[in-house]
Image 1 (cartoon, rainbow, N blue to C red):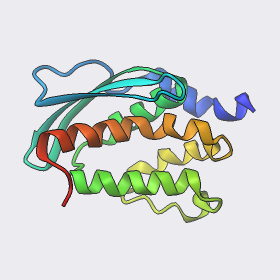
Image 2: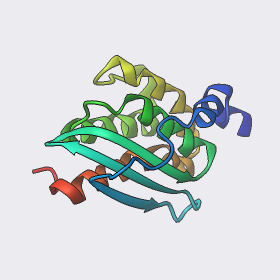
Image 3: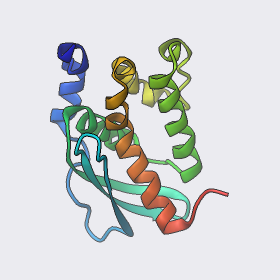
Image 4: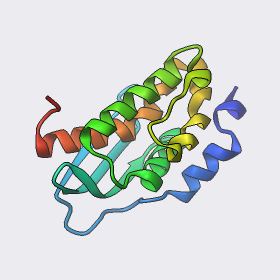
Length: 149
């Protein structure tokens, strides 16, 4: 069971830690905590209007959360708060729905790496580990720009 959750691709993303650290002079930051498992992530952002210009994170979290944050760090450029919200919905569908992997329709092919997280479907308590970096980023953007209307 653990081997399936922590497969090589997930461990590789976690080890890469893309965008880990704190960007200089962020426009805003936010910290989100998952009380179920203890994962905690701080995100730092720079915005150009509604578009995410720079992003970094500091995660004290499991390998799933670290890997998810790394995938986000590899692909964040150009996200708006509405496209991030749509992406988060698709991630939740992918890991919640039985047919998730068959219906994954990522808004951009660069998000295909998120398919590796389909393994958490069988582990409901671990789903938030995958979504936490995206939720933290959306929270930071909403705190800075206001909620999506």
